[in-house]
Every structure is written in structure tokens, then in C-alpha cells.
Length: 161
Figure 1: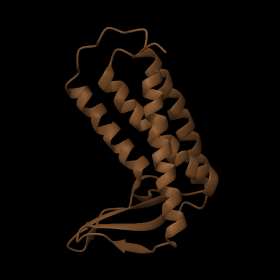
Figure 2: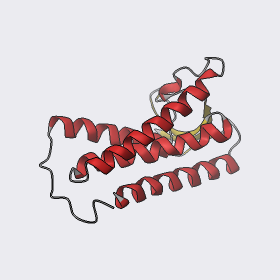
Figure 3: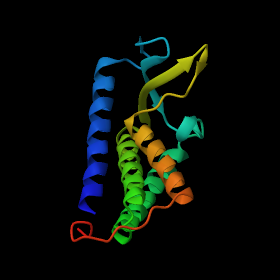
Figure 4: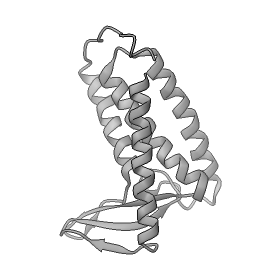
């Protein structure tokens, strides 16, 4: 279990460092055009994915904090009880790291700092961050694992710690 928690911690650290740099170098809504389809931009998201409930009046902050804490505890429990399922644990570690990365923002600021903006021909995908990317990849891996489950590997002593 230790390696999955270390992966989650690495995601949190990278996410928070990059967000710190963005906050220090960009003013709110400032955009740096990097390529014809990719920008760096500083935006604040008080809602969930795709700014869901962003204009809900403030109650959503506490709601999303509680959801993130409960989900994180559940993910750690799952990691502890399924050490032999490596793809499943990888997916959970990515989700855990992303959830904690965004949780830190919500607790400290009341919003999540997003900065990656992908666009094409006037269409803009909602801005996201490292934590969001980790959650998305983790969710995709969970779906993959659900459709194509791998054979459980024998648990080793390292998996149990």
C-alpha cells in the first residue's frame, strides 16, 4: 500500500507546486498562448468538474470538502483491502492524489485553481489542473479495469504495508 500512497503524495506535491507557480506568475484570467490549441490560464473554480454548482451560493464548498474527505478515506480503505489488484490500486492512487490536491485548494481558498486550457476552432474545453488530470486518468483506468479485469497478483509483504 505504501507505493500507492507515495504515488498519491507525488501527485499532490506536483499539483500544489504547479498551482503555486501559476498563482505567483498569473493574475486571475491572465492567459499565456502556448500553441494554437493550448493555453495556460489562471481561473478559479468554486464548483466541481466543469464548474458544476459554481454559482450555488457558497454551500458547495463545504459539500465538496466533505465529499473529498469521505472519498479519500474510502479510497485508502480500498487500497488496503485490494493490494493484489495493481491496475485497480493505480487508478485509486491517481484519484486519491487528485482529490487531495483539489481538497487542499478548497480548504485554503474556497476554490480550485485551474490552469490548463485546451481549445480548437473557437471551442474551449473547461480549464483543468494536474489533480483533475490524475482523477480523469484514474477514472478511465477504473472503467478499463471494470471491463477488462486483470488477474489478481499474489500479495507480497510490500503490498500489505
